[in-house]
Length: 250
Ligand code: SAH
Image 1 (cartoon, helix red, strand yellow):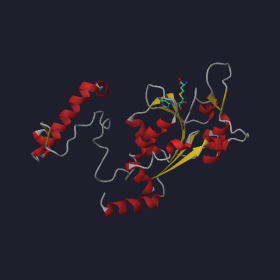
Image 2 (cartoon, protein in one colour):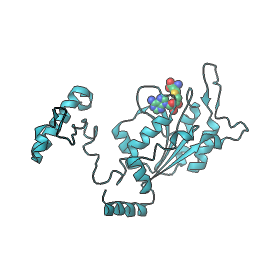
Image 3 (tube, helix red, strand yellow):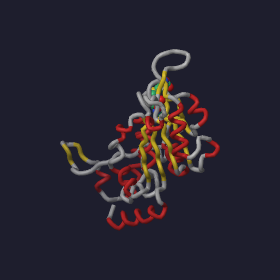
Image 4 (cartoon, rainbow, N blue to C red):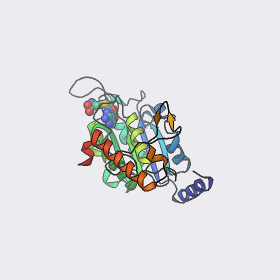
C-alpha cells in the first residue's frame, strides 16, 4: 500500500472507530500471543479496522482452584468445560447473558465440530453483518451444552475433523473474516478473484523468473493482451475446479 493510501484507509477507519471487535475466550491465552501479529490481520489491527482481545477463562472463575472443567455427568471419558466461567465472561463482555438482549450485531460463536461448516459465504456474512464477535474455544470433550442452549448464536465448524481445541479454529475463523472487512486487504490485493468467491477456485499465479529449471511461465501471461489473459485465467480456474472441486460448480 502506498503511504497516502495507508493514511486514507487509516483516517476513514478512525472515523468508524473499530469496525469490528473480536473477543476470544480460551483457557490457553498464550496460544494467541503472536498469531494475529502478521500480514493482513496485523495491518487491520494497526489501522483499527478490527480490535482483537484474548481473555483467559480462568479469570472469570470464582473458586480458589479456578476450575474451568469438571467430570461429565453420566460418566464417560475426559472432562467437560464448565458453564459458569463462560456465562460470567459473556455477562461481562456483552453486558448480558440473555441472548435476546444482545446488542445488534453481537454474535456469540462456539467453535465446534458439530457446528455449521465454515464456508467463504459464512465468513462474508460475519464480515458484513457482525460488529462484535465473541469466540468460545472448547477443549477436552467439549463445552457444557447449556452454553450452546442459552448463549451461543452461531455454532461453527472449520471442517469435518476433530481438533484438540477450539483455538486453531478461532484463528481460522478470525483470519477468514478480518481479511474481508472493508479496507483490510489494501488496494494491491483483492478478494474478488479468490477461491470460492465465484464458486470457482483461483487461477494459477506465476512470478519471476520466467524460466525456472526449464519450467516456463505460460506464454499468454507474458504478452500483455489483457483480454486474452483474462480468458486464460477463467479457463484455468474452471479446469482446476472441475478437476478438484466439481461440487462447487453445482
Ligand atoms: N467431543 C467433541 C469434540 C471435542 S474437541 C465432539 O466429538 O464433537 C475439543 C474442542 O475443540 C471442541 O469443543 C471445539 O471447541 C474444538 N474443535 C474440535 N474440532 C473442531 C472443528 N472441526 N471446528 C471447530 N472447533 C473444533
